[in-house]
Length: 222
Length: 200
Image (tube, rainbow over all chains, first blue to last red; front, side, top):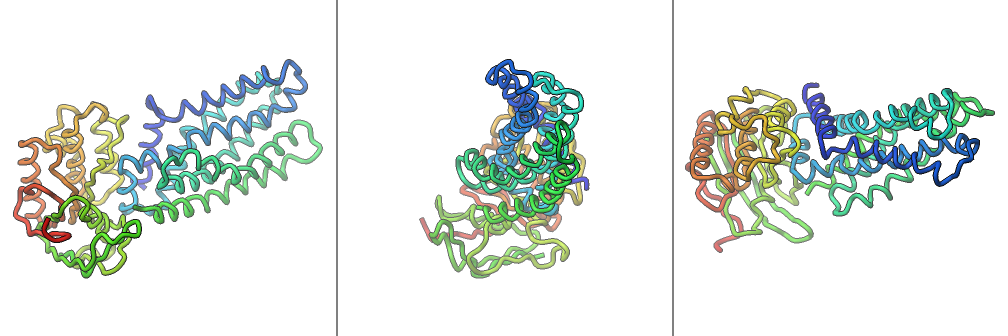
């Protein structure tokens, strides 16, 4: 346990320092959402209807943006070798790294959502619904994205590959995240069904992600 | 305790690096792996550390902790020093001490031994190459591991640093530890030599 909490604390600390990834994701999220009303035009009804989708897309792209650093930095400076050799199972170490990434880069996106909801003409209920679906769905983005990050680590120019590998995996999360938000705002379907599937996607990714990432890191050792 | 390799073969990128390599190192002994550039010294160390898969033969540690694998009982000091530039000297060392676990010693004592006690709060980004190497060496002291796998350990160290490191290695050997080091120059302690790839 000490080992895992040490790993989580280190990764969060690095992410929050200058040059870390946490702030970049939030700034990117902010940029995407702020630009959207200018592109769509001053149609408030249209903005409110597109709002959840825009917030979800922004959050998805923002989490992809910082995800390629997840293993790459550790690989480049040799830390990954020591993590692989250590007495901590690699699967748990991967899960700890993903958790740290979500706490440092995913949680700030959710905290920023209420502010950005104002820009998109979303009311209280809609904003709360989007924030809740993001809270349930962004862990799935991080834990599936981790598989791509682990595959990309041994290849040069992994960042581009990551987007190609991870985007198809994140489509179900996007579909059910936006569906649950829309259901809460305008109906007619119930909020519960898509939200349950979203939670299920997250739970599956908690199990599959660390094992798949650890397996690909072991395969890619060189 | 004895580290034994039998008929070890290493293939990288479809090319055979070495084959039929045999070695034995007992506790309290050091093995200096020598050979020209590209002969496979680093590959051998990474193979012992479990970071490369051998194409044949076996490497085993007899008489160690039966519950642990060989990599879990080893320190690997590679070319890349596993330091985070954003973290301070003491944060870097403290992390590896907590993460690697096992039998640990006080981090500030280790920094004093390697001569970095004046720089504990400095971010690692500001360290020189020699200071980074000293900080990596502090990791070997902070966490007790019986097997040290060292890749060019004295690179970037000044004369005083090399003498300090030689005394650290002597202490480690005196406690019954064993060392496998890839090196071009003299290691600073008595060591048997394992030459890879014949005479240059």
